[in-house]
Image 1 (cartoon, rainbow, N blue to C red):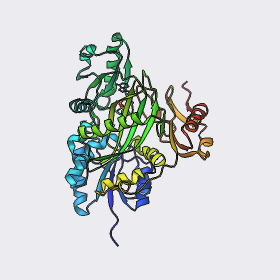
Image 2 (cartoon, rainbow, N blue to C red; image 1 turned 135 degrees about the vertical axis):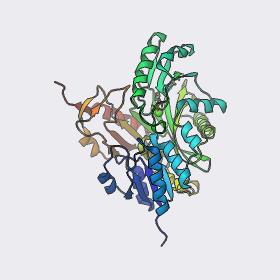
Image 3 (tube, helix red, strand yellow; image 1 turned 90 degrees about the vertical axis):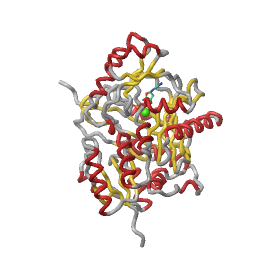
Image 4 (spheres, rainbow, N blue to C red; image 1 turned 60 degrees about the vertical axis):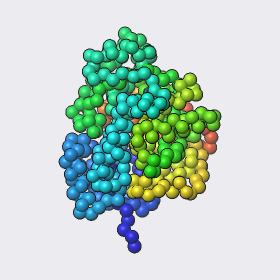
Length: 422
Ligand code: ADP
Ligand code: CA
């Protein structure tokens, strides 16, 4: 019997099971490189994990890479894949060093840098809002030439941390200062895992937000799902709901597809899964916000693609990283319904106790999964800071209207409880 293929999953969180479950489903062994804060013991117990390699990617990427190369020499891996946004550049570098399928280091650096993405899109002739990069907080006046409102954000950010909408020029200095502080809090980390990088100010794109989940193999892009996030107007950008398929006319869906495919080419992203965020300016014109070169939502966008298109997204992403063709290239896939996610809002923040109402939700037949990644006693900070999502509920429905009704039900029934501060 042929040996089972072995894939290295870098920084995969255990609270998001989709990729690990997919590995199990298709008979792939996982060598897990746990993310900061994940216990090695818990990692050993996880589905499909046959080996745990604790490496300090955030603290010492060079040493981590050397250890990976040495381990590969002893018993070669068949693939490597990023399990979270911050390890995309490290994973590209490691793929190259190990001779495995992956992004080029250039492409990985572009998709982790919001200014580099803006430049690449602009050079490719795609639509971009006006933008200014500030390398020091004191340079905030450079951004006064932009058309307001603007959005201030870390150039190497994630999860809307430090993203602030500014309507008036008078408020710009304060917003830049606030975002700058949040950037500085990570400045000690290597650039590779999101340290430093400065602050980007860009013109506000007015319109609803959508995302596109794609599979890419040898440069060919296929969109598996387009999800609707709705109007998120700020001043802070906490995401709370997604639904797929987005209910949009065919012309707009085609325009989104054209924009997303062109963005992959502009960035040089030619292997793996991607999560692209866009705004529909005026409700019609798709403009890219950013692209992540990994399965979105820490893996949960697999659920959206699976339900709304029938593609086994996580499994096909694993196949691409093992150097194989995705099955959905040749096999017919059948959608099974409408997918939805509700991210329980952090609200005021505080010392987390629990999410009230979850027991009932867990028993609901429409609910496929509830992620609860926050231990009681953890301090959750409100936006524009960010620490973690209190809980994420994934569900499936017969129609978009049913998904909306369920979302409204969750908004009414789920509440984060914090310890009372004396
Ligand atoms: P992050 O890496 O933190 O997710 P994004 O660029 O995706 O950074 O910004 C987070 C959110 O802020 C977006 O999902 C969007 O809602 C909002 N946002 C960012 N830039 C703009 C913009 N130019 N116009 C409108 N909204 C924006
Ligand atoms: Ca984003």
